[in-house]
Structure formats: C-alpha cells, structure tokens
Image 1 (tube, rainbow, N blue to C red):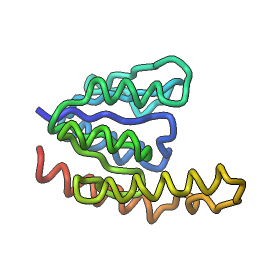
Image 2: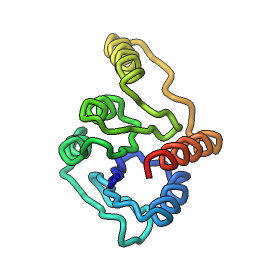
Image 3: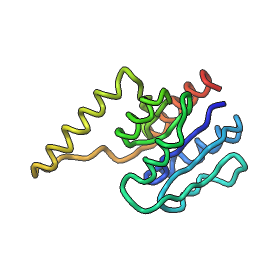
Image 4: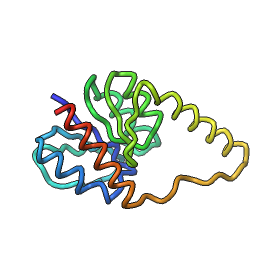
Length: 149
C-alpha cells in the first residue's frame, strides 16, 4: 500500500486542503515531516514527525523512511533524487512529477544555479507560488493517485 510523505517545512498553505481531501478520500497513510509543527489537518491517516532543526534533517528522515512505490511531496530536488533512486515517486509543489527520466536534469540545473549564486551573482528565485501552481499540483496529484491507488 502506497504511503505518502510530505516535506513539510516549505509546504504551501494553498495545497493543504487539496492534499487533505485526497488523504481522507483514499485513506492514505501519510507522514508530514518537518522541523516545526505543520498542520495539514486532523486525521487518523496523518502522522506528524518533528525532527531536529537543521537544513537536511527532514529530508534525511524522509529518505530513510520512504520505500519503493511510495510518494513524496517536496520542492527539494536533492531529496527528490534520493527518493527516485529508491524507486519511489516525487511531486513538487508546482505539480512537476520527478522521474528517472528528468531528475538528473533538474538536479544539474539546481547545482548550476547554486554555483552561480556562490560566485556572487544575484539570481532571481522562483516566481511566487500562485493559484495556478496549486491547480497544476492538484491535477498532477489526481493523475498520480488515479494510477497508483
């Protein structure tokens, strides 16, 4: 049975009701992992795991727990890469489904942008999270769950 992991530290509020409805509708065992309290909703299907403060603590916990076939929701590309390497699935907050076919390209671009920033260049970050992004996430989540649940 598929388990769902949410990288909760940067999880957008607009997505919480969307995700909660699916968790309840399909009774998906869900783990929200973060270094502070994140509330998606009260449900017997949701466990909240709070990890030590630190940049990669939640990511490390998710990578440790996830198994083949599970789904992770994260905007963290290195975590998505770790998840994909365990034959699990990852969707980002904007609706991108990471896969074996595209994760290395996303990782390479992320690493390139990080090197540019480290060299002192000012780069523009991602556009603000929007209702359109929430809609794209909802569509991708629906497609994924329709195929896997």
